[in-house]
Length: 116
Image (cartoon, rainbow, N blue to C red; front, side, top):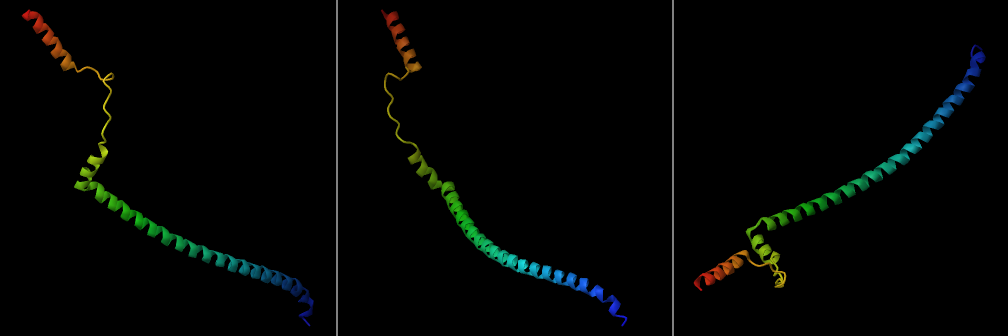
């Protein structure tokens, strides 16, 4: 009979435990949902990481090939032939007279004057 006077404590204690149990179940459900989405994110990240590594390797190989081509001795010959396109002949009106030619003509004129 000593138990009966303290039985009123069991009712609120049971309610508190039931509420805690309910919250714990909600937490576990949410954790399971988040765990599943985290696993799918990890899987997609791993797949994306593999694709990027493959693409990176491909680009590194291409760059190495291009470096090998550009640094080879044949590249200079190929680019020299391609990079020097024939320039159009300038029009005679735009050509400036050659200073040496002017000096030569001036010297010839002075020499003719002296001879005569």
